[in-house]
Length: 295
Image 1 (tube, rainbow, N blue to C red):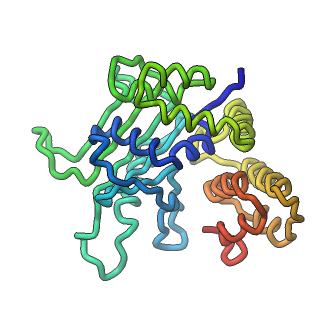
Image 2: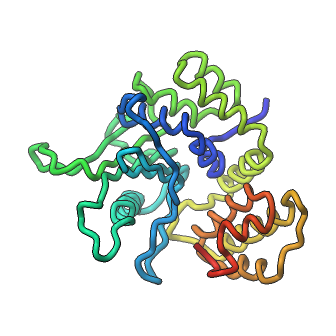
Image 3: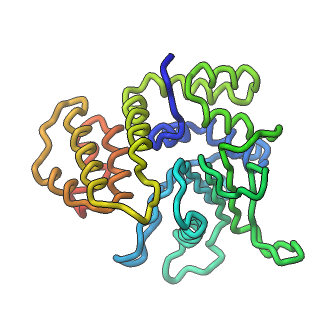
């Protein structure tokens, strides 16, 4: 039985590359009737930096609904120090990302954060799907422009619409995914997407990488990194590019750019791009590496 993990970065991102999956997930999590979701497109997950030294924000998945609501979705498998502050920082950046100098505040759109956590963040409640908005102490809502969803994957299920999504992300085999689809017709398209993903070489490669990372406790705390992790990611990027379909020789300048990059989030994005690129040239064009060294 071949194992799978939809918690692995690349598999998670690949899953949401399919519109049917995006629509069904948002319908179930946000309670929006499926027929009202006319479109939901993927957007650039890199949040715009306003000044050079500002911390780069990179979401796992950034979606935009037909009413311009922006939705950031993240899978987090390791406990992280200051996770709540980090989540609100990303939400604030997502909210202001499209507003430029000279534009009025009317251009700001509703922003929703959905976090899937493989650790217990809220031990004082048995509820595994918690929703937060801006309200006063009497419970009166100021606005729905900011909304935070926290879904804890390890808590006991009790019959919500998102139960099968939690089972899906916790599944470790295609057989488990198929059983979920048999019991819930809404998940059939999702199961078919997962089956197709299982045929992709890079998914299996990233599954192995995911469990190696877990054993080594990579990314346990996003604020405590060492240079060795950056070096390891750079080596993985170079290794992937050396084994692209055309077997092209890597330019020395490209190798130098990759080895000199120390921002782990940029390296992580390059790693995903290198895994999906069909050629070195495609990778370089997609990431604009030779123009400015990073996105």
